[in-house]
Amino acid sequence: MGKARDIRAKWARGETAFGAWAALPCAFAAELMAVPGIDYICVDQQHGVIDYAEMVQMFRGIEPKSVPITRVPENQQWLIGKALDAGAQGLVVPMVNNREQALQAVGSCRYPPNGFRSFGPTRAALVMEARDTATLGGEPFCFVMVETREALNNIDEIAGTPGLDGIYIGPADLALGLGMTPDLDKEEPEHVAAVARILKACQANGIVAGIQCGSGASGHKYAKLGFGLVTITKDSSALQAAVKADVRAALGQTSGGTAKAGYT
Image 1 (cartoon, rainbow, N blue to C red):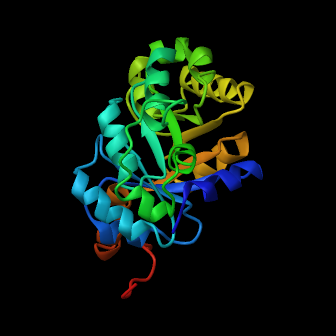
Image 2: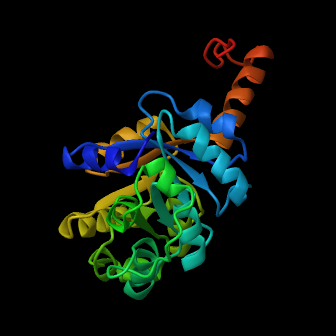
């Protein structure tokens, strides 16, 4: 089964972990995305249409080939604890604006004395093949999202939070916070400078920088810059884009289309 230690090993070698984003409540769709080269799949509980029970089924589809992580809906202890107890190997915690909120996220992931997570690893103990708090609480990684101007102004104190594994950039919300149109792969100088500032803070504090990208080509660029957790595709976007491309090809508007279809 895919475990956080597989991702941590890549980071230790100075490599980038590439992943996919799951917004559709479908275990089979998540399983289909777990192709070679996809190191993790993030089940999105914040903006996806996925509930807790569906998340567990999606983890089951992901685990044989990739590492299941999740973005929780909010920085709340019970939400983080339930996701980890279900077997999440990594957490992405949204809308963290200061050190206090970052400490809340980290503490919710770790057992005492390093945090305040409650013990009840119902499924986690099974998939991680462990019941000790050092493994269950120490292996899953914790990323917080920097998405606002307030968070950007506090980036150094957030990046220096003890126990934090990384910062994940939400480019669209960061753009909103900077007064721009929300989108991925922003090229406005202020946004580019903000992303570079976050990366620099992560590197200075020895933690991993992560980012959401709109394409594999964009992901390659950010990996070359030094990002260690890079999401390159999303199920809902990829499905819609593929269907649109085939419609255009069928109407004779383009000569291309998607890759040759088949049963797999």
